[in-house]
Amino acid sequence: MQEKHKNLSVRIKNIENKNQAIIIDDDEPNIQKQIKQNEYQFDSEITPWLSQKTASIKHPTIRFHNEIIDFYDYIIPTAEEHRRREQAIMRVETFIKEFASEVDIQAFGSFKTKLYLPNADIDVVMIDKSMSAKELYKKVAQSLMKSDKFENVNLIANAKVPIIKFFEVESQYQFDISFNQMDGLKQIDEIRKAFTIYPEFKYLIMILKCILKQRELNETYSGGIGSFLLFQMILAFLREIRKEAFANKKQEQLKNITLGEYILRFLEFYGQKFDYQRKRILMVNGGSIINKPTPDEKFSLISPQDPEHDIGSSSFKIKEIFKIFANRFNFMSNYNFKPEESVLKYLINPSDQKFTFIKQN
Image 1: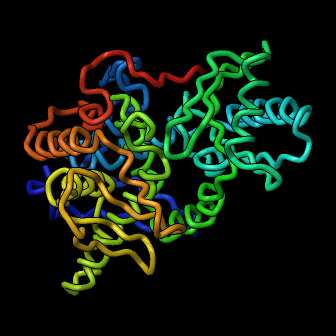
Image 2 (image 1 turned 135 degrees about the vertical axis):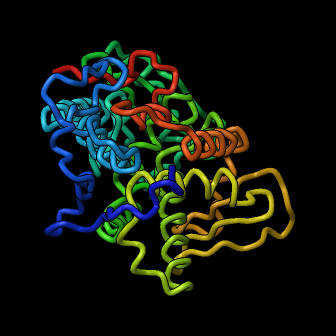
């Protein structure tokens, strides 16, 4: 798909400092003649994000770009959805303060950026400098398990960063609580800065979160790629794209990259080009990729906050994940997309089943 349409006049840029991608018009003459009311009846359960206007675009490359924007607008939380999560966090905080009044409780991660899927966990960190993370972990675990306000309390004590997972009964939101870990909080400003520098970032992260979540490969403790690691992987990839463009004096071409091409190049970068057995990613000082001291089977990405913390090493399913990336890149690059069909569904809903993240009106 890239080669056939690489010369299309398309672009992405920061519009009025809103960090939004441009909706691209098909450059064929009389394109509006293609868009007829009720001509295209897409399945609202398989591709609920796809607008009729986008489906009517002839060129798959442009249709893919606009469909990614459709998907982003569909999947991000509404003000009401976010308010319900804020209320759930307040209830959890009130409960914990009853037996640990000195604890500082803060949400972080995708909740802060409002870039989360409809059924996403809520990441919360508890900070109390008067006790160790282990002591705090035990104290909270005992109280949660005794209360009828919470259910399915799951203690992940053997993870590199021990967490407690549970559902708040009233909201049915799942929480992930960590203890005395500052990485997530320190990351908030870096995330916001990245979204300003890279307008395409927020679109990529929502698509990739969906790809991983639907395949149950989005939890670090079970070998997948969690939100923190995914953010760093996207940032490393975008930095490499820019470095390559500037090195080859092709920085002007960055303006012509569609969102679909960014997605495909990400899949290609990690699925085919990046040798995770021999290379490691450093995030400090603008980022770099260096050789590992000794080749191994682990993915290595070093935390920007702690040079001793390899946040990629826990993802023991990385070989499986990178194979999926390679598979999807090869398919999307060679498939002959039909007129008016969703392009994005082949990444996030390839089985044509009811979409996992249907949102209620």
